[in-house]
Image (cartoon, rainbow, N blue to C red):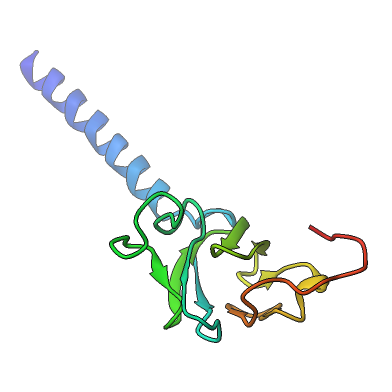
Length: 138
């Protein structure tokens, strides 16, 4: 009788192990895949700090001189899943999207200050948005 219980337990354990292994071998869902997105705000003058809320240290909550927030002086790589995000400095912020293909999308009205649509490099060229007379797209 003890051997029967032992064999039943062993069989159950092997079944659970096989389920776990087959589940971990399944391909990731499109929304769970992370893409490397480079944020390059090095053209901003004067240099400042920036954030992508929920993905980088916040710039508004700490003393700028002692914060771990990212500086605009060098490009930085972020691991981002498909979805909506927001880039921001102390003077300028805008929404952008990482698509299911892992490339960037943002409003065409930002083209004078932001480039990288359809790529994995978000380049910010302006410290603040310029006057824009059209309809807001974001």
